[in-house]
Length: 64
Image 1 (cartoon, rainbow, N blue to C red):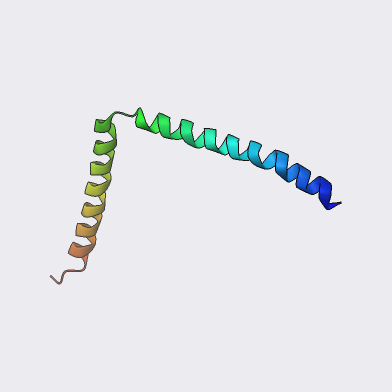
Image 2: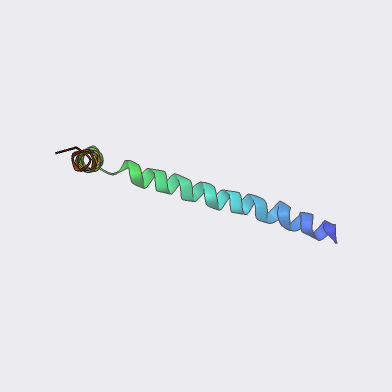
């Protein structure tokens, strides 16, 4: 019974590994094609939003 299981693992394992490896390579390649300006603008926008939220919370807790 365990012989056929090892056979399946031996065949399916490398195939599954290859599929995951191809997926990761394609995904990384697609992300590299994004223009750097778009990535940096998005990061800057997120940082500004976080800072504004922190400022709003800090101002709300200030005594009048």
